[in-house]
Image (cartoon, rainbow, N blue to C red):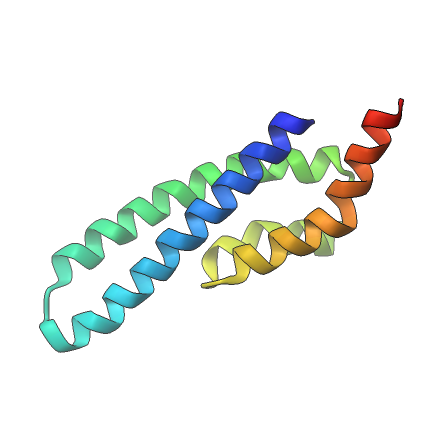
Length: 105
């Protein structure tokens, strides 16, 4: 369980940071007209988002989350800054108590 949580947190932060960088370069593209860097960063973000989905979905199933939190976790990588917000809420509401229950046994 701890490995799943660690992988989820790492991928959430990496995906979120790359998405913010992508948005910054996309805004800058309006002034420079250089689409190559935006295409590269967009492709990297797309690949990282796929890894994020592969890592986060099993964690949501393991935590037995309902549909709402599961969809929030899975879609968080598509909205800038949302991965940080959702990761924090999921950690406090579901992951913390689950890990406390695992270590108490």
